[in-house]
Length: 285
Image (cartoon, rainbow, N blue to C red):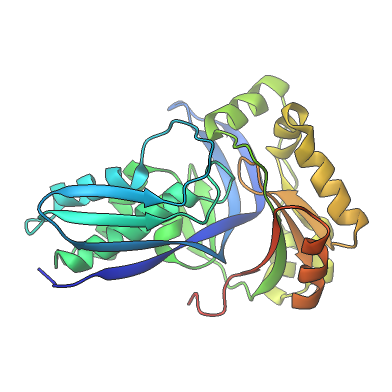
């Protein structure tokens, strides 16, 4: 076993677009999405210990009562690793819970990578991805650490060459559970968004002016119908000069696209609890 502590940043993600295609027989939904890591990150530190446990600091006041995905990840890797032993997994939370930013999935991915190194498991990337898929739909994308085009329920990934854009992230004091967001999409007959070819071309070209008006999320309308603050934040971002604005994932966070860093900082100053972020981060590759 490797001695000492292993540190990993668990990057949040944003969905530049999220297209819901249909309901699957397994109860999940067939989706298509451009998933991009951003500079906001939790910190995951693993170190040898007598037993396997997870400790979380900085968790928000509210909780959705879900599973601790980092612990699920640690147990899953322990089953696949003949050298598994005890470990303490410490997570410093900075990503909002149930904010549509993949915080739990990011923690799970970082835990898999860090424990694979700590325990010298030598589990290959494909196997880690298979383990991640069983933990949660977003985990395989978070393992890659890069922008990806996601399909299926999250298991089909293709690399996406996306340069860095500047965003403003607006967060709220409440979360939205993914199962609720997709159920509301079903109940409302919310429909499927446009073919993303133009959006993907603009994103790949690094053209923020072209990309901004093309951002979309099929879950936004049904979620905002239950949480009007989300739609209001998106409208205010546009009125304040953002090139585009959209809810990330299943909510509740809203992202606005800026021209550059100064523009992102100016936009963030107009919203309580907002911050500028970069995605993908310059050091994400």
